[in-house]
Image 1 (spheres, helix red, strand yellow):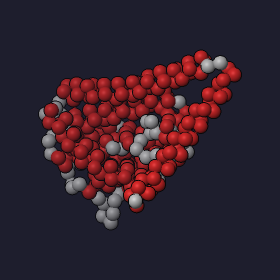
Image 2 (image 1 turned 120 degrees about the horizontal axis):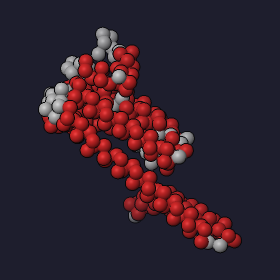
Image 3 (image 1 turned 180 degrees about the vertical axis):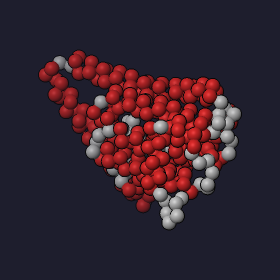
Image 4 (image 1 turned 90 degrees about the vertical axis):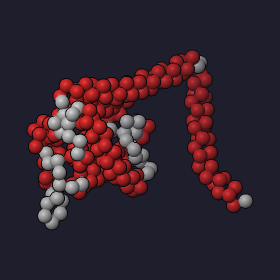
Length: 245
């Protein structure tokens, strides 16, 4: 903290250094000084990410209001932003524990505060992920591949942080990063392939239906979806009436 309040210019400089020149930044980043700065970082990053995720969801610029777009849909509003911030703070301390375990495996710094500070810096990537999430609304494959690229870059930043800031062994940190990289690759690619398969299946069904009946099929599908929406809206009211009885 700077005298008189949080230094936003310093935050901006540190954010750019984290994302653009991570090796230089993590080599000299402060690893002590209290939990105040990391918490403020987590709050600001989570708030910015929440704003963009909410905006893209409201504009329907994410796949299914955010298949890769994050935690907040367009209809959640201010409560979604609040929960995004709360989730960011919780994630900061849980992430600090996870980074500490990784650092310990790599023979690095096991001071919890130092690992929380590293986690707070790594969270600089969350607004970037939220800003780019709108791409999934234009192309699910483009959004998925961009999401994968961001996740892999996040693992690269973790590798740099563990070796430079926490003095972990490079060989062990590299192996852990590669192993962890398999998770987002499998998750995102499997999701994309499942969506493609479902889309192909739907297209095949439409091809098998005679042309004169396709419009009727579409209308039946729309009526079915509308009935489901009406049922969802009516469900709470019915539950309240049951409670009153």
